[in-house]
Length: 382
Image 1 (tube, rainbow, N blue to C red):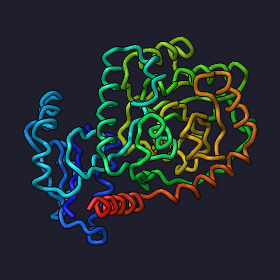
Image 2 (cartoon, rainbow, N blue to C red; image 1 turned 90 degrees about the vertical axis):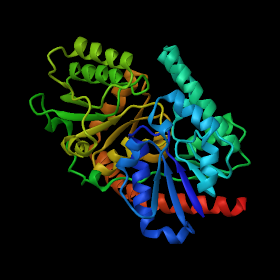
Image 3 (cartoon, rainbow, N blue to C red; image 1 turned 45 degrees about the vertical axis):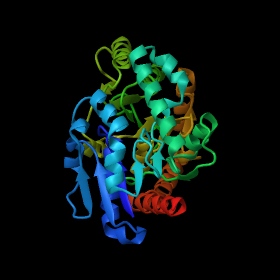
């Protein structure tokens, strides 16, 4: 089986991490899946990040290194011919392959393409148009696909309700987790053990967008301090949507102009984020749109107890091992944090349970399930 991986639309972030990790695991067990050749199609920038290996053929085209229009034109008019020369099956890593080559396996990665209520919050026609075009590309990809990979049951159910894809071969395959985030559960203390000089520090790691809700967390922390709770908040993550970044800035400026209890660190390199988890007393995760919440998984691995958004798929992964709130409701956030602070023994048990649960997630497992599924789809297609 000559397997092609279409990574032509990957820009970085979680997509490149996923690709690098499953390829690293595959090189050890490639014969197990009947793969005789593996070709990765992408820009030169992405290919340069992949480890050199004689098993992997890195392939690019001039259009993959140019602008969006040139890339899409090539994908529509010329890409199929190049795939047919080299491949027996294609894995669309971003689930947006728009050609006619078959068999194809697509992957669902981005729930922003489906959850239109967030489009209404964005209020930027250009941004909404981008989501709509990407949705149409995924719709076309999944319609032509022989198989589809989902990262969560929530994404699978949502996509099946929106698209007529129930007849397709489908499989839920979770992402793995880097061992750098593994931590130990610390003894959990009563809130009376803390003071405004030595506060209980919450950490929220996430990029800044309308569905991440950092400003609601800032307001909840401010309100709790006024009620006498010695809590602070550290924010880690760069701004990926300017209006959301501006709203966060204004909220911090209004409630904590001297930065006494809100520390906004902005973007921190991925390799340094685990250090922030180790410094935290508690973790907050307040997103209301995820496919598989990688940051929540990292939080679970850290051994630090969690207060979390009640929006799916967060409960699918965190289960009963967190204190939940409505991420759009400041009072709900406050109440969840108060309950969290009042139950040190319960949060310690939850953190211990999370360490057990997170052992089910590894990149080796992800790779084996992914390439096993691709092989299965290929044999069924034949």
